[in-house]
Amino acid sequence: MTPKQERFDRNRLKPVSVRDVKHKVRVEQFGKSIPGGASADELLRSLPDILAARNLNRAIDAVVHANQEGAPVLLLFGAHVIKVGLAPALIPLIRDGIVSGIATNGAGAIHDWEIAWNGSTSENVSENLDAGIFGMAEETSAGIHGAIRAGLADDLGLGESLGRAIDGGAAPHRKHSFLSAAYETGTPFTVHVGIGTDIIHMHKDASGEDLGRASYNDFLTLVSLFEKLTDHSVLLHVGSAVILPEVSLKAVAMLRNAGSPPGDYLAVDFDMNSSYRPLKNVLSRPAGDGIHITGHHEIMLPLFVAGIYARLERYPG
Image 1 (cartoon, rainbow, N blue to C red):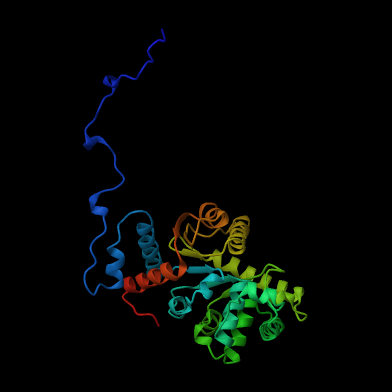
Image 2: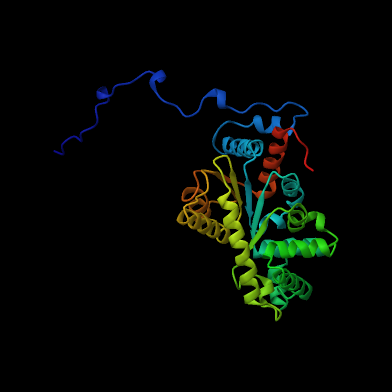
């Protein structure tokens, strides 16, 4: 005869009162109904004080606090930010002095340049690749390389060289250019290039020496910007999977080696997914504190900026 299987005796359990159990969610944290004609701030404050909604409001408050304390706020973003039409939402942060330094990768600079001069960007890669013309727009390459050469003659970095050329050449759509806004306001804008990653590297007028020198000038400028970050500062990182997380990590490493580390700034990563380098190299390794917010840039960033201006009780521009 098969022996009866032993079963756990529930009489051994020791129930406790629900009042003695720790919970992570309280009714006070719940979202609120949105009143008719709600302001941006009322909309954001109606969100639950939980998870990503809490982080979004915390990030907004951090930038507002930094502005009130006169602490630097840096904005590092990938090319997708420009491609999804966010210039009108973000450029006011530059013009109003809320952001004190900007960085992008090579693709970001190219998209910005094309928007400024052409009012359009972002090729249909598959279609143009099949036709043998992907990345071969002559005007884009000639204009950018010419601007870099002219800038290097004055020992400028890549970002300042391009901004000066857009501004000085009166590009027809420069009001939508981050580079132009930064140059006009004297806000440092650094561009960090990986050789071989961008369409302008395929052209006969490309110079690895010029690209490297101009981008390295910008890297040293970025290190200097990181050195100014305080305990009240915020580092905003948006949508760069590799280059900007790596560059920012090296900036922090250099400063710590030199005995002049940045303060315990808050790092905020906005991205459409969770990526290894932003989570490690922007948030957990160098920063004193970090927030990751997942969502589409074209939705999250306008909400974020609207919240900043609402709480500063200012209007963009």
